[in-house]
Amino acid sequence: MAVFDVRVEGTGSLRLASGRTITLGRAPDADLVIAHPRVSWHHASLWVGGGQLWLSDLGSSNGTTVDGRPVRQAVALRTPQKVLLGGQVAVELREVDASPPRFVVRRSDLTGGLALRKTLRFGEGDVDVPFPVAFELHASAAGVLIRDDSGEHDVPVNAEFTRAGVVFTIEAAEGSRRRTALGTDQGLAYALHAGLTPAFAELVEPSGEVLLRIEAETRVTLAYVLGSAVGEDQAGSPRGQGWVEDYAVARALWGRQLGDDVGNRLKVLVHRVRKEFKSAGVPGNLIERRGGWMRLRVMRALLDPT
Image: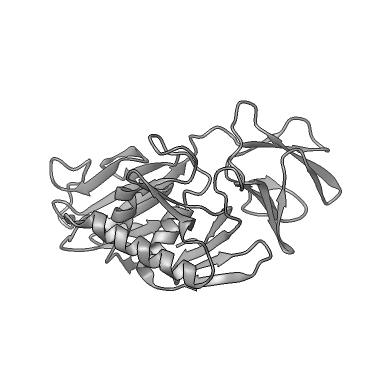
């Protein structure tokens, strides 16, 4: 489960996890009360949807910026990014890894093992593990994904690979549950590649062929939010992985002002995306909805930083 530390200098900090929304502003009922003249009564809100941190400006007088860009609708954040309220008050955001490791990476030249939760970067400079050659290990739905100059390669659990003469072995962490692979839970052998700046979403076959590219902003945001939850479990969700609450999806799409027709708006949007899928020969049930939740049934998702 994604957990983020939200900190405002001189005000305080709090932890933000899935299922919670916090408000920043001068109002006494704000979750983080910021006594600054440039900050509005209810200035901005933050929430976690699909494992992703989201920010929305609440119609503040002096605005909210992310890396100098004005926030005009709900935006997905990566950490660290420079968030300013009213052009002066900095909000520090940091992801806190509260999950147990999914895998253990063992090396033939060392005793013990490295815990792999999401990503391990090997190489020189600003990396997690100093090493003669550069590569990354990513926990994926099917095991571990290696990314280097030659591309991306899946490494199943208990398999070995070699880099710079060192043999690495991937093991499932003791007590951990392996993320569901294709065929049993997700069931459809596609990958998602998506980004928000610029807005695009691509469905990719195992061969690497791009079957469909979507550029309509709202549809891309939907794919991005659902893609960020691929392989994750959410408390209270239907059986299986990758589920995101309809409410969290709607907040990411339309911000705080959802209105009474949000359920119908989501229904129409999903119908249109499914129709676009079918026009490209992709099964419409790639997006599944059940009991106020939805998910994207793909093998893995590669999401570009916003």
